Image 1 (cartoon, rainbow, N blue to C red):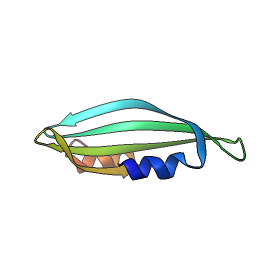
Image 2: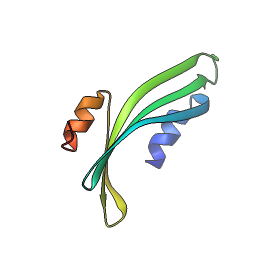
Image 3: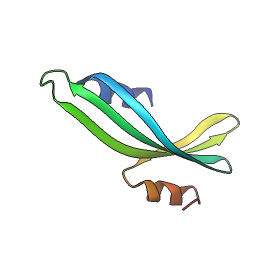
Image 4: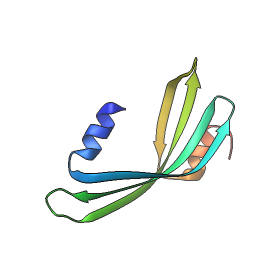
Length: 80
């Protein structure tokens, strides 16, 4: 996960995340997210939306997967 943030943040400055709908189903959850930033070289504003499905075991993240389609992430955890 740390590596993902490093790769995404490298070409951007002022990377921000807004969290939307959160759905829980047993030991799993889905979070809808909007990410925004500004290109370091170009100054162009960028925005993208995605959802992440999480599974928790023993109080720790055991699995996470990103999805472009929120409904697909919900289906992954059995909530859609």
